[in-house]
Length: 95
Length: 485
Image (cartoon, rainbow over all chains, first blue to last red; front, side, top):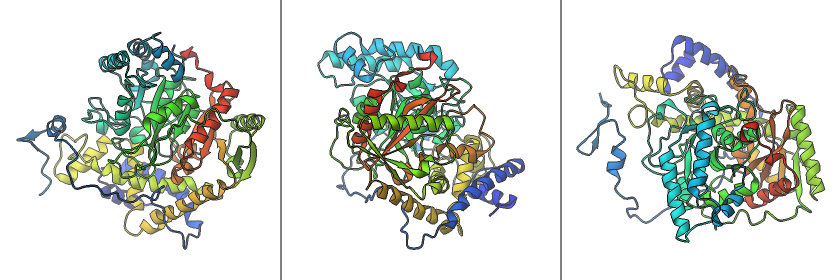
């Protein structure tokens, strides 16, 4: 498998990372080297093998539906770029 | 005093021979003198450290000291520490002052151990040489032309150069063990889930694990006693009985079965490394251990599997750094997409971008099954290999890294060569097992060599025993670079 220049630009767009044409060319070469390494996986027959998502068999724990955290809004908002009336001000995200 | 072990420092403090303020001052002075060259720390704050030291001395005066109270420790800059700059080695978080403590930071505070500062690291823990840090590379204290390893390179270098008696690190694919090997210190990655990941900036959540880095296995055991423990805020934290990880240190090794995976001893290991590891095996035989050959037949797939799973998880974890929710934000932009794209292009370095792109691709429509699911299935096969091997042996032994520390810049042009630096460590993370690296010799280039031990699930105490007995019989771990003389 080989990623084309257009593939790189498409992936970068999906990842929301701006790349220049020159960066895309260089990145493409490196990614193709990495994917040649990754391709080794395809040679193994894994039919019947259960995918392993975690190292331990963990299950979501449940807890009482009670408040456990204290209100630290002032501390958290102290490091925000902009706040107003206890709310975070962010760039316009709905157009 | 700078070469003392944690146990020795503990005795000095308990006997009133020194105070936490004196101890911290000595380390801070060394940091001031040597850090401009080594670049092992990103943030040092003398006032904060000394204030914590004074509190530790007061606690001791009240008779409330624990075994490590007053002993300072350096923290990898991946851990949120309240009031401290927490950058994760990235421009993206270059101005982030954490408003809360990671779980393990809370535990060190509760033990009365002052923080000496935040150590340098590869950006978002992605790297094997510490060269991807936005704050510049760390120099290996054994040879300033060499890398210290990564991603916990600052932690390894600061312990090796005795800028701190101990440090915390994290290990996603070898990031504690490989730099420990390259800098001649002892580092341990616990079983996945033993240390909470709360407040540790996530790279690949199913692989990341915090662990101690110090001068010896005995010191690592004492530090793990502080770090390990259940935390309800991390859904992958395991609820287990509290353990004393130093309980088995003194056990003799007679009858110990050491598994030597044939896949670890094939091509690819530098002759100097092979010689040092063979000598360590001979030493273990003298100590009464038996060796048996075991096989990890899917070992060769661990690097490819890792470079699908870790970037996949990273691309998801790092999506939060978008200029709205966290971190850097581009100064000028046309619209929302433009802001995201510019922010992430400016905030992330080349290696992080590369891994996000890999992750985005392998998770994208049409490729998910071929890459991500296939990698998860192979992960199962790799873990099963270890389960089979541990039916025959108590501990697995091999090299930590295929070579001694390489020169700065040597592998930057070829990411695949860099990725292969972790060829012996990655499988341990995929399986979730505990592993550690300890000093076992030097190459002809005068650079250190590490020996890797891999334990069964939750067998940290036994693994530490195996390491400690070797360190009682050898002096490799006592050797220090000239800067620490």
